Image (tube, rainbow, N blue to C red; front, side):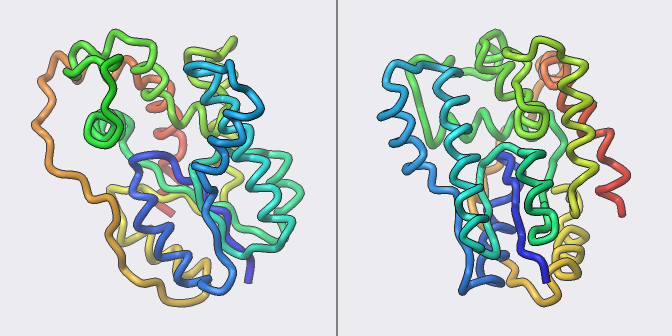
Length: 238
């Protein structure tokens, strides 16, 4: 049985499924330690700010993932970017898995999560005002960042980055959709060859509905991720 490399995109339900997988592989499992990667970046890049610091942090997380794979840890989950070279090197030993979600719903959930768990005076305190910031564009393009290598703020060729992300997802052993968690759990059981506990982590409170005018703006911001999500529909239905 292959090990599992679970690429956990924020606010896609990955905490619950990642925890279930780690229980399935209880004697050989790990997560990417965000505190550890953050400390390493602070030491190595003390002057990095904003999105440049985020990029440096994710570079460190990829190195951490490679080290865990080299150690033979059988189940690894975390907020870490996809690395095609690492996948090619580890393809015989690891199945790559991820879970996606409607990009507009994911964006709204991400914003409210940040407001609850990581409040900042620098972040607008309403969704409407937040939509005009560069950080909104970054959060709106998480699929582009995780699978294509760049957020839309940093991509020099957006169409190429979208195609790269779409191609990356075709190499995954399993791509799930949060709108059908039962199907994803069924496919995970088939992939791992055994039962999985049903867990619920990070359950968000119900938020107010988004007015149509704001939803249109969010949809425009999320256009790259929507293209990537729609391209993966066939895999998610399998």
